[in-house]
Length: 152
Image (cartoon, rainbow, N blue to C red; front, side):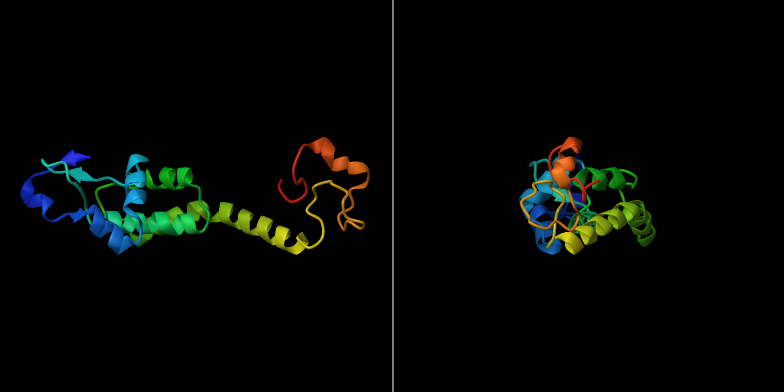
């Protein structure tokens, strides 16, 4: 957060404008800023203002969160981009390529869960009369608590 002169300040967006244009709550913008995902500037009157580039950064954050990317991974990816410019299409391709393998793994795990959900989740509870994954004598309990077959 830096101090800027009044003529430059008028070109920036107020927090409410960013919230309205991005569909993100003001409190979420403050949270993103506290986590270092976005940056604001302060006037002499301590008003928080954002460069227009923040709208694209917020859009990237929203899309990444929507597909299940943890905030820490989003931050690590955004840290590779300069704060001073709008992320480009090339930037997005680099970020999305970075997340692709993880997303593919999540998709495979979710498909496995979906396909076995009506049968056995591999919990080892032996509560079902016929478990399609067969866990005689609760062998999976030796591997630890919780579902063992679907969550590597």
